[in-house]
Length: 289
Image 1 (cartoon, rainbow, N blue to C red):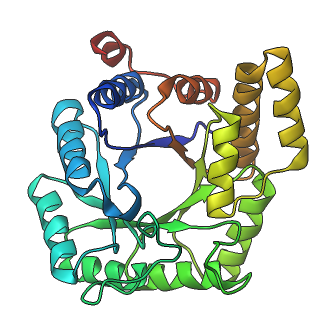
Image 2 (cartoon, rainbow, N blue to C red):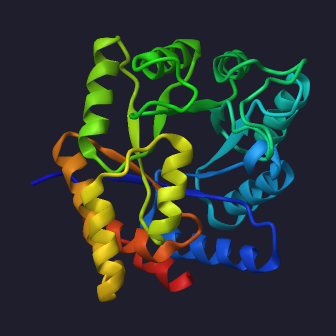
């Protein structure tokens, strides 16, 4: 029988009052599942930098969760970026998800700040030199839109691990074989650090396809057809639960021990999937939530 996986969740910081309520409802709903860690994103172009810091501090203080704060290279000098890292350390944060980051709105490709970090590899190296953080990085089982070729994502990940990262979290994918192929290629390249699959529970299929198009995730035609049929029959929620649970089960049976869920601050489907995988909530925390 497959082992129960370790789990982690990604949240994003709120920009409105309604969004703030949704974030805290999400954290309250998922905290009883005792995640290994939770992460908090930046907005595109680093636009939610202050909000991210506030959310990270509040989640750690109010819920006692291990929070990994996102940090990117976008639109900031090296000094400014490292000052943000120091402010995380001062708040008791010991983990960072170090990323290149997306280009600001209206810009088609990432351009480093003239006085900033040129890439996530440089950012990882600087954070590792400080010795203050456990560093996680991103990984792409399917080719990153900016990648120069089919092996570039493995090469980049190895460079980040060699620079001091201790684990990677993948972009989401719909095909378990894409993850397994990537994992095998990484192992062949000498990468021994854990590569945690990123899972997107599908709460909105149209939105999921837009995300996929932006990040290079392949949409299997059969899955697209299935969601089209389910929408006509009013069975989208059931299909979403089945699809996500089946994907996770396949990964676990293939040797995966950790799963990272992109919650989009919508906890219900993620909670159902995780519990279907055998993760039991802490009853006392559930009562508090």
